[in-house]
Image (cartoon, rainbow, N blue to C red; front, side):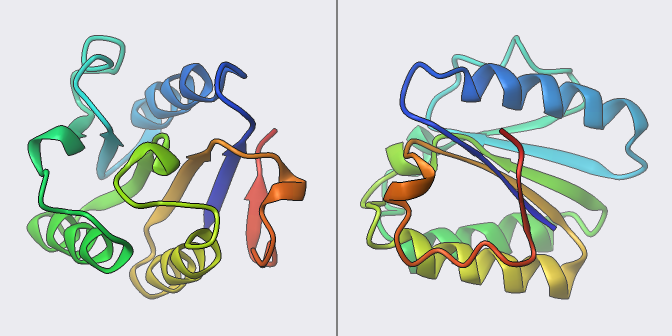
Length: 140
């Protein structure tokens, strides 16, 4: 399942993602991964959550490299239940034009792997032109 938290900067998406991640890890039987632009949230998240900081991977610059990166994370841990992607629009070269393709790929990966994805997107629903919201849940 793919879940979205949407809204412009300052609307509380990251705070809500942290809450969701911390709630999820309490009942999880497997691993939880939280991918963020930098390490500033590391102390807000439960110690059982694997935090990945994209600043540590400056050569991941586009959608395909990011998808490959996700597959690398998934292949290193077969017990991943949920991957949180905070602020995807702040990661390199992610513009609204790329979002529909990226989300479709994430939906396929989720179905094939059984991993849930929670994404925060700095945009409003009306701005997400071309995104197919079928088989997804908007959390706000």
